Image 1: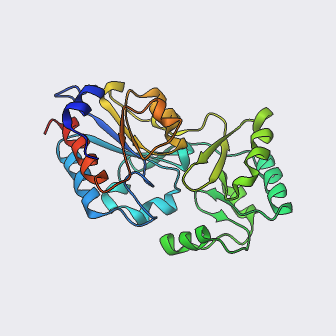
Image 2: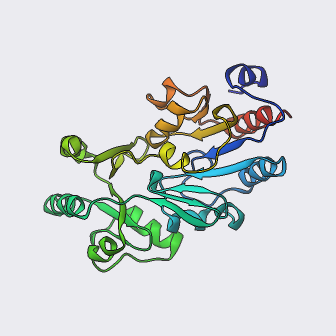
Length: 273
């Protein structure tokens, strides 16, 4: 279903003649099926940049999995990676937050004992069990980088998060984090979840960057790790339907045949076109 500019303008706070920052999640927002950014989306991003506005990417992906799926100019923009665990500004690491190795080792022991699929993710290395899973294969296809031979290689550099691919363990980990400095981000569409350091999220990472007034920041996302962005920033656009995000998102773009056209309409409305 098509949405119109009048409705968009009514729901978003759009200040004319100001420099705006557009914050884009990747998967399920501007990237689909794990494939590289389509040219039609890149053209829209170029249009935003050409109009003099700023673009920030905020994703749960690692740097390793971010760079191969976007054009080189996109990877040069300020970025919030690992769901907020790593912030890159002006091409350099600005902040990073690691899991405590003792907690991570404890979680890995549980997962190994229960023969679970998981992924420990660091800046330079990653580790997963020597088991078959589509995600493990996708990482190699996208980045060309194989897993570390041992999890200690990741621990030595620091791990930003652990992705647990069996959501049957969600209840266990919700109890596990109760008295520990950890938080969980559940990926609704993929039925998996991240365990990260407490207070790490995309909004906290974004706040480490130089931003305009809140009304001049526009957020586009689709899943639980976009929640704090939409809670804290008044101009938010949700792709698909997510129960928690829907409480805060001002605009919703359905996943249907009109989704890209509606995305373009939202961008053009913000840009005053």
